[in-house]
Every structure is written in C-alpha cells, then in structure tokens.
Image (cartoon, rainbow, N blue to C red; front, side, top):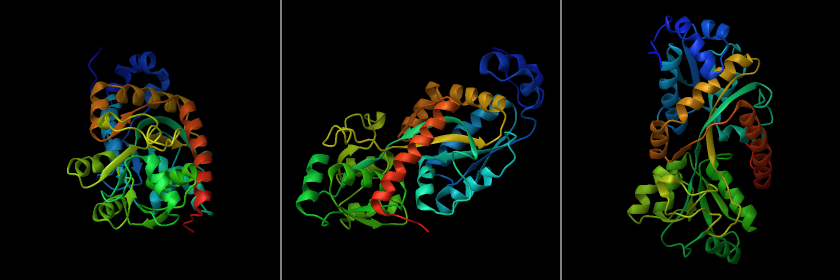
Length: 328
C-alpha cells in the first residue's frame, strides 16, 4: 500500500486508492476534505462518547489528510450538540458523535427542534456498550430472577439509582420492571457515578453502572453483580451472565455510539466516511482499545444504522411512556 501522507498533497496522490478501496468517487476524493472536519460531541471530555470520537477521529485524520477536531457542546442530555449539527451545512465538515441516549429525546421533549430520522444522514455505528446490574451486598438476591421475585413480594419497597430520565440505566430499569411485571422506585441522581456511589452506601438497592465503573467494586466486594444488560456476555466480564441468562429471557438494553452527518450530505461523502470508519473500527487495535473501556466494536452500513435508529426510537418511546417520564 502506498504511504499515506498528511496534508493536501495526499488527496490527488491517493484518490484512485480511496476510490478503489473505500468506495469514494475520484471527484470526491480530490475535493473532500480540503479543510478540518469537526466532530461535535454532546458530552464532556472523558465521557464514553468523547472517548469514541477522539479515538476514531485521530485515525480518521490520518486517512483523510486533514485535522479531525473534537468539539464538546455539552448540556441538555446531548440535544444542544445534536441541534448544532442538524442545522450545519451538509458538506461533510460537521459530524455528530451520537449515543443511544439521543433516541429517548423525542419521547421526553415535546418541542424538540429537530428529528433524528429526518435531519441526519447516518454514517456508521462504531461501538456497543453494556451496563451491569449491581445490588448492595445486603440485598438478598443472587440473580435477576430473585431480584424480580423480591420486588414482586414487596411492591414499591425496592429502589434503584437512576442517572436521569431517558438515560441507558433508567431505560434498563424500566425494561426490568416491564418484563418482570413489578414496580420499583426510582431515585434520581445527577449522574451515573452518584447512582453507583449510592448503591455502595446502601442508599439505594441497585443501579446500572458501566462495566469499567462496576469492575473495581465487584472485585472489592462492595456490590454484587447479577448480570450484564446486553444480549450477549461482555468481553471484559465474560464470567458474568447476561440478565437474560439470569432470569429475564430476552432482556437486552445496551447503549451504542455512532457517527451522523447533516441530512443532505452527498451519498459519496457518506459512503466514503462509512468505509473509512468501518476500516478503522474493525482493526484489532481498536477492538482492544474499546474492550478495555467496556465497549464492543461494531460497524454498519448507513442503511443498517438508519434502521437501528428508527427501531430504537420506537422501542425507547414505549419504555419511556411506561414510566411516565418527561423533561418538559
């Protein structure tokens, strides 16, 4: 493979290579990109979304020969960043790092100024993240089945720590209640860290932290782990069963990370970016990096990603309606 150089000289030199290997037309390869690409992230530096954006963006820069700048626009559960990209020029220079949490916003906000389905062109999924159902050691349950039985025997007595309406832990708890036909009291906290701390302290009975947050607590015996929320076991916690395996068959509630462009972005640019993201994410290096963060590398075609978003919005809307949650 020819050496890939940074800078504008890369574009004409390897336009044919890009065309052949990654599906970008020769014309597009010579005219895009000619300036830095921004990836807008709706969450702070150090968050899972920020990690994925920076990890993928750094390698994307090496391929396209232009800087890929990560811009954190935090606030309103990521909707500020999403709104910025929804109204950006559809030229491929402003992209959105999005998480599954965005699919909850249509059900939570009656005046959302954009549509995730209408106003964006999906590029690719990048990673799947899972959570862990952990209980305080005093809770007399060894698996999800026993936790549900305990909740059923004492309606309204058990409680859980939530990191906010529409968050992945909140939705996991809603699904647990729906599938188990039980009622459990939500105790909201400012974030997942606070909810996890409350579980360790016994302020709440259980919560759904990320794998990396749960791991040291498991090892120190400060919490008991009943299962992971995904439909298959996590690489980092291969010894821990899924909630589906431990009492609620069919349970599946994960988060995901992906890239979107504004609607109207040319198919050539979307296809070219998709091919590069797929190439970057599906390397062993990236799989290892993601696994250490409790993430599983996973990519899609733009069409598959659009289908996932559509299905997720429908599923999450039903879950949120079952809880009565609203943010406006």
